[in-house]
Image (tube, rainbow, N blue to C red):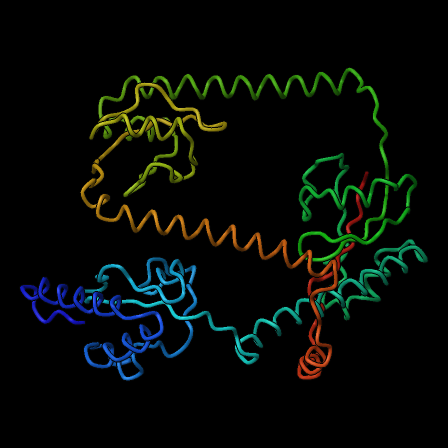
Length: 396
């Protein structure tokens, strides 16, 4: 119901409350009809009033748009009516949750097609990686294999062959990251030109081939001296950086002083407008110590000691400060609580559905209608293989 003028707001709200009482007074068998009749006679929503308050299509919460009008119906049970009128965008609403409506085949078709494309792309890439593995075992020549399969992989040969540095367990391998699957694939490789099993990695598949292996050994004196010297230099640099940050913090009496001293010393100076506790502070990142330091500062104050965040030392100053509006927070408290509760419920429900689905697949309770899958496959054009196979050559 619309509010024509601000002075009529209370009157419209009371009318909405009266309508809720009439709906709740109806029996369970007649409540839906009563709601529909009242919607046709009182609702000013031209999109839903003619249909008795029904939405044109089933509602599904959009995770990218929080606090939408109909989001709260997700937390209601079928047949529930909102206890009080809901104020939204200057109007008053009464919501009723209907029965859940299953998706039609046409509605589910885009998701089925996307899943089918992913399955087909994965299958094509897996077969191509298997062929690459077999050819590597035959030729021991990754460049030749890349030339043979480049067209099918929709890649250039140079993109398919990558050489890694020497790696050890839990290393972050360039282009792959830290992968237990990749480590398991290169684990059995002991001799040059040994080829490992194809394995899934970030963005596709990898077929590892060993070039050279270095066994664990005791480093010689020169190696130790070099590493120790590097470590000492790094430690001294950190100590010098911390000392300089302490000097700047101690000498800065205001934000302007801090900015001038930092710029003069050649340090990075940055401003974070509308900063909120818990959010990243520019390139400094985030952390409890950072939040505590910011929270304790008043306007134009500067921290007297630098705050250590990771390997960085940060000196903070507050140019302006706005205290939280507790009255506004109190107004939104219930809504925020419901939003967080709803998100948690959705997470638990999603985990439950995944578990049940896996169990049903294992005991054969889920049926696949091959005729439907076949019809979808027949209507799909051929696609380039995704994800793309790659053939890293690790130096183990």
